[in-house]
Length: 80
Image (cartoon, rainbow, N blue to C red; front, side, top):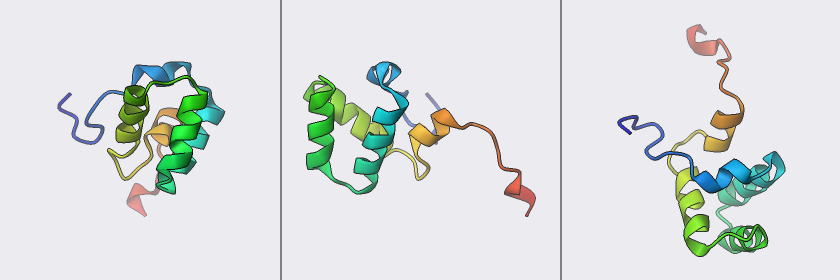
């Protein structure tokens, strides 16, 4: 885990999350809406520890971790 871009590994609970669920979580995280986040994660059956681990994971990087997981191709703009 020496990669300081990601900090920690993707929480295991996200392996069972749907793309829609991850998008919902990402939206709540971007809005910093912890109350809505809790409602969502409670509805997914997650424990408070699971919910916090995913919240922390989303907050590790300026680029969304969910976006990095779903789309790992470069845009080619680096030489622009």
